[in-house]
Length: 421
Ligand code: EPU
Image (tube, rainbow, N blue to C red):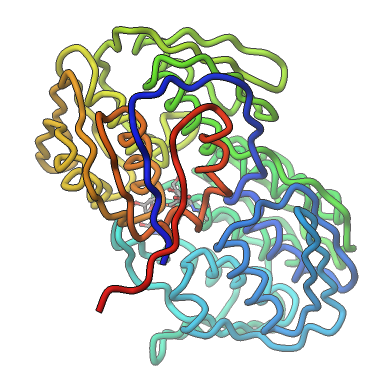
């Protein structure tokens, strides 16, 4: 098991390059199920979650090969339609195979993902949508079993905008007969990225990126070569690192349009942000202003940046309030942050944060992906040494974060430790 050790107090400076977006790559890789043939995807990040989805596609009979950040998938021989529990429990985004499997094979058997550290995370909206498209759905022995003769276009209204739900339905509807309209759809950049790849494959989709997406079913799709968009959450995490350490960092290969809510809040907190075409430069200031924020579906402030901003607020001047409106249990990082000297009180979905002058390094444990990023950020700002254990959570969604931060001057390293008995 690896740990990350950080000696805090250094100001970050220099340039850093953002990798491909995990949450765009996952649905795009599963979209390959929809057509027989050879796909090539560039700028795919090297992450545990990406390994999980590639493994799942291989289990289903696809030929998957990874060469650096390029992934080749040949789906010609795909013949299995099951995503087993052992694989889905590693990564709940495995549910993204459900829509494409139904569309191509007319059958799917996918383990129910269950809850996770950040909340119950039901998939009722995915299932309701698929049954409106004509799928017969049974829940048995911990599995979703879905079958259809042919999916048929339908009007689908989401009670809540769901990112993977919108993606699953979009992928199911592209090969359905007739027209599907998704209302109150999620508007995240990753939805547009998936729609762009599906359109390149021959799908007929309009409105991706708005709350109403219209899909006219087509008979057949073809394999393509595509490039994954930059990861806005990795970019945002690096931006907070710069602001937090009073640093001066240029974050390259990002899309500033996707970062608007993050830029807005960083500027309110007092950081100077310069926006270029494909990069942003963040200069942190000595005084960090307290700010309030509410997590919301895109284009609102992303829940995936909440834990990182909480660290910034922990050393701000005064009180801040964070309201988490997406997941009911996404404050699990707070108890670990408090071990580093933060002053945070939780009341329901709100966190009251009183800024302190200095955090202090401590041994802490990562509990989920974004929580682990927040502990690393806290370690950069703290006095003394912070050791973050269980960094396999970090490796699910950040590629070599410690190397990128070290390249900016942070005193940070990864060590392998033997399992304590
Ligand atoms: N929801 C339902 N029923 C459903 C689906 C969702 O009630 O059938 C609820 C969820 O419980 C949640 C809300 O709707 O309260 C929104 O959840 P959503 O479905 O949008 O989340 P997701 O698709 O499971 C994706 C990202 C998450 C990110 C959220 C919110 C991927 C693979 N995952 O999850 O990313 O936090 O959207 O933006 O795209 C991460 O990268 O760390 C991560 C957790």
